[in-house]
Image 1 (spheres, rainbow, N blue to C red):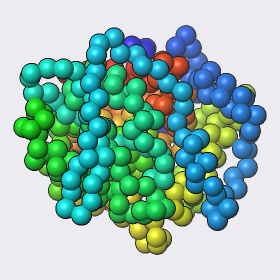
Image 2 (cartoon, rainbow, N blue to C red):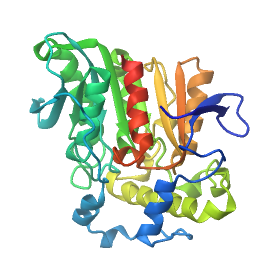
Image 3 (cartoon, rainbow, N blue to C red):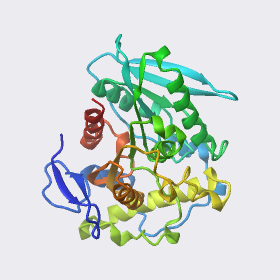
Image 4 (cartoon, one colour):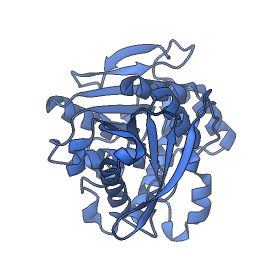
Length: 346
């Protein structure tokens, strides 16, 4: 496990989070070498923000670019069972990942990212396998419908309805419905929180957003968002600005393709930060990347949970950017993240 340091959640906060340190690094506010290498290898520095023209966007090519190379770290056999969930008006593909056992297993519903317009179970297959092995749980990954073909609320409805189906059919699959976690990364993290806020949240023991997109409002409309809120040493600033602008740009894309009107932006099922009702959430583990475009919204949401007396733990990965969960086997933080989740499930 990575070395940890307890730090304030923000400069003005009285609450704290656990900072997971970059291996072999004693400095603070530095970018992880993996992130530096990725930016330098691309040769693209985005130091000035310019909104993308979605009319000229090639969705197929963008979907192909999502995800990163990753490795299977499992040392035991993990079964993979694809299944079509029969809902009242549609069928949603899911995949079970589990070790062979006669005992009922805890359930982790995992919701992939991809800005609501891409991503799939196959992109994070190795992560689901490793999470199932390390947590001794059944991991169920949902391939929800994607925008622009199926805009909001399709993804949210699919995830919520599949979770309801899992609860109702737990005995048939030898699942312990009383030990249910819902986790997700990026857009999937937002969907995990949105499901936790809904009526189905009463049946969820733990919600885990991994760098969740908890507020998809435009940065120019937010009084809390500013480049200066991401402290970094001067020589690494170009890498941070590049990665922030990369996902600021993608946020504008998903706005245009996932929602059909501006009024939906602050719908809690789209941007959970704006919920007025936290009552269905019982326990939350927020996993952050220090230089993630959405980290500031995660910090504000964490503050709300803590002040509302909802158990909330925050783990922040030093020097990391949005998307690090993709890089299992190439990024030590990805493995550490899965081990931290597994520890809490066990």
